[in-house]
Length: 273
Image (cartoon, rainbow, N blue to C red):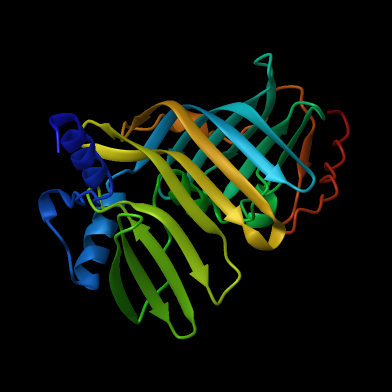
């Protein structure tokens, strides 16, 4: 065999060999409980986020992408501003975890009331508590309360597969072997949304996903966030979460189910006032 043929043979042979999995400084983890502890610690390191992004929605009713400015802080502080193609404001959502305020530019109305999942879904097409929504945006996967765990290694996908079990319900977590961050989460045996995280980037000592996708299979809908320029773990500006209505904008008070409440009648003016 001449040198050229030998080189080609070796190249083909190597291309068919599986690449070694980079397990990072922790090495290959074989215990499910240990991996769960490390994954939980890794995703708990991010507490605040602020910056620009894109929000994309895909559903049977339509699909589209808008620009956004976001500020989120655990446990439930959230501000999201949406803009159209010409950078004109579309809507602004603010919540402190207990109450919410939503300015709809097209209607020129300001909705306010309890920060229930139903009310927050006026702005984003997902019905989640504010604390859970903030967690998802910060790359933190909500876990089911497991009574046992199992661990395997998917060598084809080059991922850990950590499964949490709770009776007939299970949560399958695909975990990056080096960064120990959840790449995909799927709950089985229960109607629940799935999560996908992608485009992990190092920011200082943190590794953070810049693509977040939430999928609701029963509704054939997905909500995606792509962060384009963000900072992490900076002290939040609490004035951003002020729930006051803009000046000269009609206020609509809604109940927990999103139904408009009648305006509060003002007491009659006293004589001579």
